[in-house]
Length: 401
Image (cartoon, rainbow, N blue to C red; front, side, top):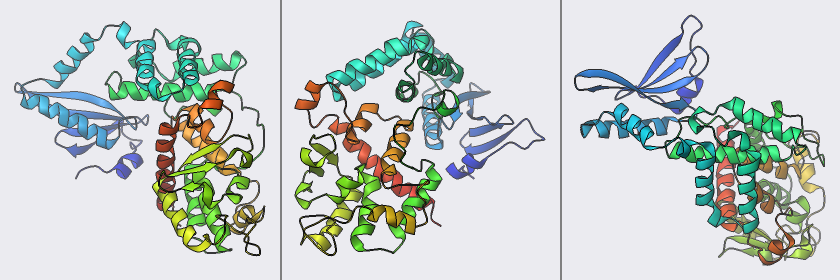
């Protein structure tokens, strides 16, 4: 029978064996070793001889991608080409310089730069050429977790440890580009435990936040499905994980700020902590929720009016109190903590640091760029906010109690 994603995730090699094989069909199989590694292989016959080709390592190469690579190999066979010969020829066609980390990183930068501001373009290029200098001349397919660990430690030693998660996210995206262009079969930056490599960063403020995906899935499911509290309190707590706004900004949200046609929330400067206009792209899930809320609270200027006085917003601590009612203590999760949750996970997923910071309404770039470009990184943020809503929805479904 064909393999499934869940089966692959749970596969392990018995202690009494060095390795096992699990077949997916059409020659594709997974080699599971006693050390925990899971390697994709494909058996085929060419010129009357049985051969085998490596297709990469799981989870860097997921099941769907492994099947795609196997299908491409079968197409080559049908055209009379040995997939192994084709791969060797492709490797020979790339010079050593072309396969060095710095060359590939700058190709990725060239591909991405048009969607960034001038400040961000320059900043990312500096991070690649200066902060990642230890990787510059290494062949990308030869870079391992140890090399990236050295980069992280050098950043910490330089006195700028806060740059480490940003640079790790950039390296992760560069390897994603290299994988897509078949310049490597592995991504050593994926899942690298930065918190175990450098000393913990000093926390500026203490807002309890859940960052474990399973626990987050349980939390979102509890928020979305538990019937308790008032309508506005319940709906406000459903909205806050999906918008990255501060509790005060959610409470003060007005219908005048919501633009359904443009799929945006436009919050004026006087309502924001940093005294700057703020744009919030709306995912399809959030639009659906807001339209539902509108059928109930459109009588007020506020999205979440106070039950006693519709000319005022809901009270200050109602979202925090509802979290407590759901069983989440102050040292586990806070209403403000959803911002930290989103920031941590999105950085781990490889999203642009500056795009995340802008969406959190933090100061980024120069004073000039902030003054004239309210829509900074908007295309990337639109994609990010939809992906984030999809991610929360998937976690909630997977973690039903």
